[in-house]
Structure formats: structure tokens, C-alpha cells
Length: 362
Ligand SMILES: *Cc1c(COP(=O)(O)O)cnc(C)c1O
Image (tube, rainbow, N blue to C red; front, side, top):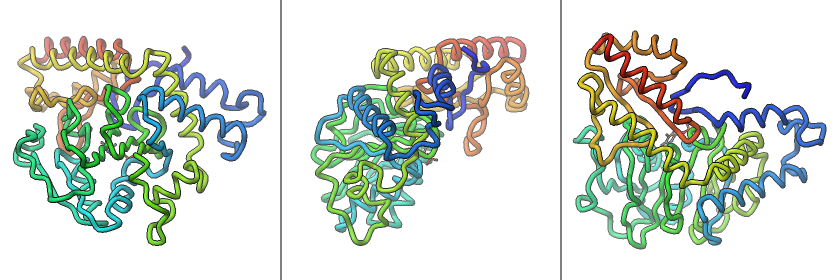
């Protein structure tokens, strides 16, 4: 492997599998004998058509996506879907119910309010977003068009461990930061949103999996690029898609398949996160504030007992090839993001460093 070796704990854009980056490099100048780079190639070409088809087929295989769901490869990141979902799903005047569990669901709520009627079915704001509100406390509206939740709050480090019970109400879920890291049953969802930059590929791309009956007819009122019907009818190629991002996403899907699929990603993420949480909980020096049953496997914020050591921690970590551990500006402290591409060896190296740092400074 020729890639320079640091373990990158960034929340996103984040680490990609080294094997994928090496392959991208190897075929970058001449994509499989075409004499062209992937970034020079028409999205209408036979080659790109093959990339689009295979990536969809591979993703369907990874998640056993039923036939009555469309997969869209759109632009604008996950944030575009904070608007696109309500614009489409509330177009005929319904209410969108939301679970408010942190900063990302909060942003989705703020955006949805610009496009339709929003009802907050539950919020953990009073608990500083350190828990997920118990199902029994949710107050759904009369007849909601959907129930929205962020499956993993990337900043707070809070994750739904199960899919919420919502009966017949279509679930709309932002899975940007835990997509393909755990098993879930696609048929329980109306819309799944997965921005690429955490677990799939380059920033800018967003994968949307949507149940066909939720796709209306093309609308005269929506911006064309924000109309699910138009994008679905045109195979996500109404305009030029993010060809490079889509190509890399396709390689990541194949990489996951070759590693043993989503089940393998889930086993790995349990092993990594268990090890880091245990290190934190066993120490009197590190602390994670999230209720244990709601802790994220992907994003693990933690603080040091003595905050004046933060800079030393980051500096020494970097000297040990452990980078991007600084916590989000709204939370402070540290955050270790360990997505699918993070090797166990990266987690092991972080734990070893943390134990050593505690021994010297704790
Ligand atoms: C990162 C993130 C987003 C935003 O992604 P962009 O690519 O910046 O639009 C949305 N939701 C969650 C849960 C995220 O982690």
C-alpha cells in the first residue's frame, strides 16, 4: 500500500478505504483502456452507464433493497435533503413530524419549517441531547405525512439502536453518518438519506433511497433538481451528476461487499466502539456524557478531566499519526469518528495512546 499512513478520525469528509484510493489512483489517468480519466468522461457514456448500473446493483445487494424502492444519486450533500424531503412529501399540505435529538435533526427541522408544517413529536433538548426520548413520550400529530429522525447524531454522538416504531407512517431517516455500518430493514422506511462524505465517498454526493409510492408526479412548482419524480424518471441524470463521487461510491460498495458486507461492517464497528468506550469508562481521566444505551458506534465524543491538557493531547496524538480528534466547536473536548474505513489497528493505536497519555498526565 502506497498511501501515507495516518489514522484520520475526522467526522467528515472522512477516511476512505485505502484499497479504494489506491484503485482510484491506478485508473485515474486511463479509465480501463478508454484513454480518458473518469473526470473527463460523459455521464451518458457506455462506461459511466456501467458504473451507475453496477453501483445501484451493489447497493441493492448490500442492503437487500426491495424492488419498490428507487435509489437516487443526487447532489448537494445531505443538507439538500433537509429541504428536498419536505418540499416533496409535504407538497399537498400535510405535516412532517420530527424527533429532535441533536444538531443535525435540529437543522433538518429549521429547514423543513421553510417548506411546510412541522410538528416536534419529541425532543431531548432538556437533557442536552444526551439521550433519545423514550418511545412512550413521543406525541405524534394527527395524521403526519412522515416521521423524521437522524439515525446518528454525528456531533453529539447519540445513535438510535433500533428503528423507531411508527406503524404505517413513512419513516424518513438521515443516515448520513451511520449508513452501511449496521443492519436495518429498508422496507420499514419511506426515505433514507445518506450524504456520501462520512461512510460512502467524496463530499457533495447524497444517496437517497425512496419508496416508489412516495414519489409524486413531476411538479410545476418545485425546482426541477429538487423534484424526486424528475430525478427518479431520469435515473439521477436530469443534469450532469457528480460523476466522480458516484464512481468512488460504487468502489466503496464493492469494497464493503468484499469485506463481508454490512454484517462485517457492523461487527467491526462494534469491536472498535466497545474498545474505545471501555477505555473511557474504565478511566477516571476520560469521560463520555451520553447515556450508554444511546451511544454512537461511529462518533465518540470525550473530554479530558483537565481541559488545559486538550492542546497537549491533540499535539501528541498528531505526533503519533492520530489526527482530527478535536471535538466539534459546540461541544469542545475530543471526538473520535470511526466510520467503516477505520481499521481496527487505528482504534487500537488511539486506545494505546490514550492510556499512555493518561499515565503521564492523569
Ligand atoms: C455531515 C452530516 C450532514 C451534512 O452533510 P453535508 O454533506 O454537509 O450536507 C447531515 N446529517 C448528518 C447526520 C451528518 O453527519
